[in-house]
Image (cartoon, rainbow, N blue to C red; front, side, top):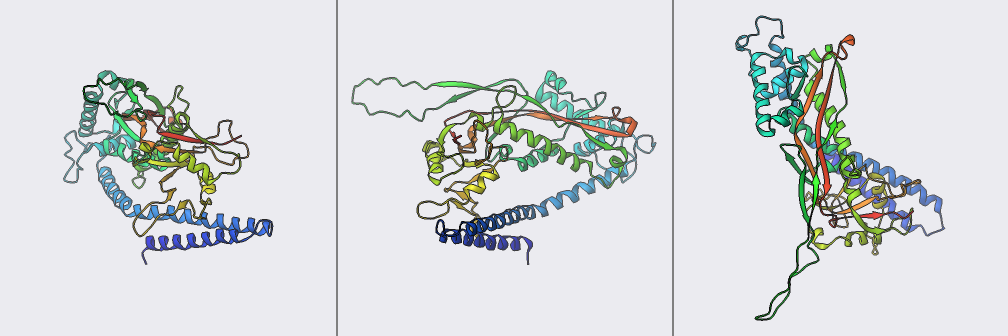
Amino acid sequence: MNKLKELRESQEKLLADARAKLDEIDQIKEGDDEGRAAEIETEYDAIMVDYDKAEANAVREEGMAKRAAALAERNAELEQIDKAKRPGKSERTANGDGGDDEPKVTERSAFNTFLRYGADGLSADERNVMAARRAEVRRVLGDKEARAQGVATSGAGGALVPEDYFAEIIKSLVAFGPMNDDTIVRVIETGTGADMPWPTVDDTSNKGVLIGENTADTEQDVTFSSKTLQAFKYSTRLVKVSSELLQDSVFNVEDELRRLLAERIGRIYNQHFTTGTGSSQPNGIVTASTAGKETASATTLTADELIDLEHSVDPAYRSDPTCRFMFNDTTFKVIRKLKDGQSNYLWQPADLRIGAPASFLGYPYSINQDMDSFGDSSPAADNRPVIFGAMNRYVVRRVRGLVIRRLDERYAEADQVAFIGFTRADGELLDTAAVKHLYAAE
């Protein structure tokens, strides 16, 4: 049987078991057997942990074939690269005439050579490819911006990554939080890091009027304002690798570096785009959101309060395709047990037959671990565990040109090479009426 099918069938069984547990709790009258009710709830939580694990495994399985094919392609390319001789071998010529097996030099293969052997390890053809890349960056960014980014492959040991490599990093960022996902928030890429004023307007309260014939109309101005997107600089911090590991043809340094860079940048991006203060860092979507509903209790969340939060957002925003709830996994655990007045669960699992995603109150949701937790024993003074609204009103601005520097001398006594990456970004909620938060009572 297909492994993915087995996982999906396992999810369906786990979900049925979980619902049976909750129904069993409902059948226990208050005060009759509170100990048994608590025991059943613990069993329910354990089942849902298994459900979430099965979901994660299914997602991984769906992408496995594509990733395996991409990995095989990259490994084949890497093997071809290592057929070429490294510096000091006379067979490696400036014209790339080392024989019929001389690999075709691409932007990516040249970058891989730079990672593994440094600027001195580049052949003439690879240098030409990297020089063409620098020229293209200068054309897009301008000389001043290019110098500021430090794109030279010699001297400082920095290199702008190839477009496809950078695209893979961007895709990997999504795994570390929804605020990196361009299907949820709006993502723009700019050629420079200059301040970007962005006009904003909320005209949802204004409407046209009916007037009579030959009657002069009155004015109703549109009130514009402006917010500025900047370009805050982020570092991946140092990644140290031994020279032996770098030169081992089995070790795919490209893949490993991409994974490390994505993890580090992805985590700080999602944190700042979620709860950033807006002072010398992005203004996070939770920070910028406006209050929609306050809970009556710091420890009990009700279905009515979440429905009130939903309706605190104007219907014009609720019809947006990106409208959704967002909360962390601890809060999700509380929400998943809530029912409406007819004892129907507000959370609905994904419908595997028609491909519909899991939903809450009829809306999709995103798990964001950088948000506050509802029911925390020591919550923050301004606890906002749930937000709801049109998430694409939050704009993430990324500056093109991820720079990776290779440091050959700093850890030479240990025969190690260090890598560090730099990139720039900002984020801002341009329409604060579009996203509202649930405020937990203290």
